[in-house]
Image (tube, rainbow over all chains, first blue to last red):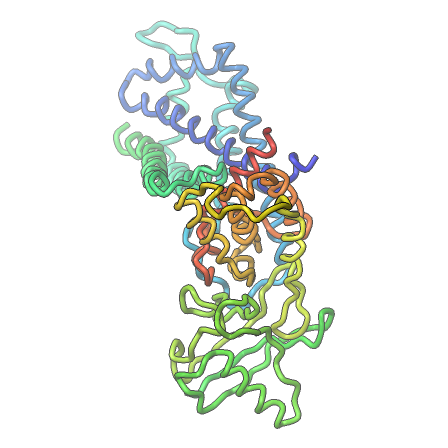
Length: 224
Length: 246
């Protein structure tokens, strides 16, 4: 049973699920960006409809939820064990951490978790449970698809929502900045030649993802 | 130099501890940190007070016995040295120096600044043996070993088991220590024979003892007096994964 519970096994699962979620973020960003390139919202709504109805995606979505669940549960479990490992802290806090964001993974993680909850309430639950998304009408014809695009645009016209969204995505960027290279290290992939490249790629990835998502509400708020 | 010391005093493992302030005067900049502690203790003894208990042995930076968490740094603010090699010229005249013991559940305080690091011995014991067949003395060159591997094994073997990695880690993780001990054998042909069993047993023991989990903050590498690389941790992760999957 030690394979299930050892610290390294937990870390390996943590990193595998993290990498999986990082791929998902790229796909999600790609779809979101469609909103900026098509003022009729047709592109975005067609893809959103596909993602919401395609049988393969419907099955895969549960794999994604499982990935989230494993990552979150293990993250909390590891953190609790870490707190227990040092019952009494130092008077002068250690300042030697090399990777700044690594110190706050549980905190940024909790904020992302709360954001995920709000995100589900605003989009996923409305489509799957509440069914209150307006129909997408293109050139006067009801397409039979939900108008997810208008839901996003309406939300991104609320200043408070835009600010909250930007803060959440910046925090996601901080989380990813440590997560990217950390995942490789946990999997044992550390190499004199490639690790500096992976670290650089991690910085680029976290900036592109974070800013990529942030650009969308800004453009919508100021132009639509 | 005149200094203000804030030292953690704790009479025994179960006693309540607290910080006690001690001013020290006329300390030479050339004195080592432990010599400064000796001067303080001599004063305390002369005044009929209990001297501050702290670990030390060789005072040459090679035994791994000295510890002390000084102003937020294990082994003090200097790089790549143990506390015994730290000198007072690293501090300013009139500075306040906070001296704490290593803090980790598997390193219980014995007294004042001394902690029980026998948890590390238990991990080493869990690693087991290295197969050495009896018989005639083998030719030194009979087993070819790549120079790079010999160097990396030697780098890992430089770990003196002082526990600074655990002290520095925000999670009190012992991964740097354990990975150095795993690596020094895993890199060499003689150590490969029991490599799988060794890594599994050492990691299991490390977890059992209550050390925290590695979150790749790399504070351990930054504070290690022997500059043990976190590449060893990645190697241990690989060794562990391979051992569990095969």
